[in-house]
Length: 195
Image (cartoon, rainbow, N blue to C red; front, side, top):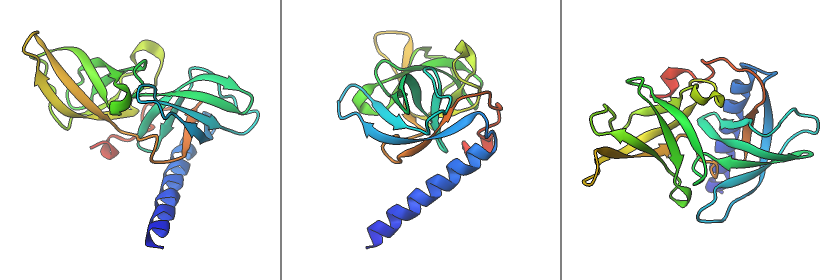
């Protein structure tokens, strides 16, 4: 019984957080619900459902109150296919919140993590650094939480570091999200929540 109550409390808190997020830009966001997800060890995707007539289209991004979940790849009536940020084919332009350094994070599939590639060893990146969308590449607004650095290792065979990142949002933890369908402010996610 306690597990059921705890689960319901987490769902209510998630919905409350999404509502607060949506209130900041009600015309540029639409609620979506997960109706299926990937069971493949390599592909990380979600199938979402939304109200008929919502202006959700390929390229829109899906977020939770914790950060970036993924990108809409295709739409069919009131459903869409979303590629998770941790999918092996996914990439996102990020910025280290502490230093401003910009890079590209790539999904690692079943590891449910991301990796920053081609980052020189001398770049100042530390464990627990927070990564947000950089706004570069024209695909994401600035400042959506993407993840937190969990390891930084110098590779013995190159001059680059191997940097692994835990995504901010876990698509399997909730079944309700927000699709960003219009312009949003760069301060949609406040930096005090990111630490």
